[in-house]
Length: 74
Image (cartoon, rainbow, N blue to C red; front, side, top):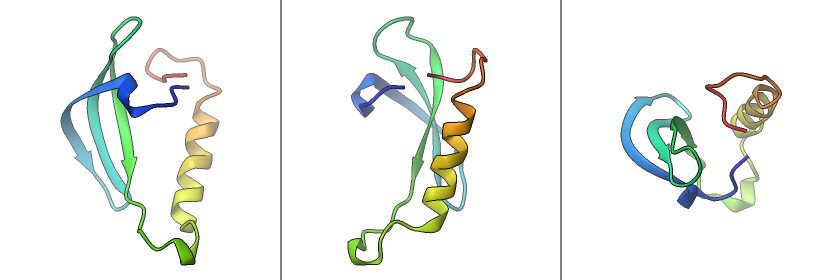
């Protein structure tokens, strides 16, 4: 899994939901595949902790990581 947003070039917004936006992007290195990048809207209230929806979303994305499919970036 990539560790840095600079690993991708954001090309266009392709969707928006209650918890964030999805963008069409391209890898900057390697195969330069087109991918989808999801950015979550996290409130800037550090004293309230991490919102539950963010924890659920990240847990689901981590489960998807174990699938062997060409559309899922490792």
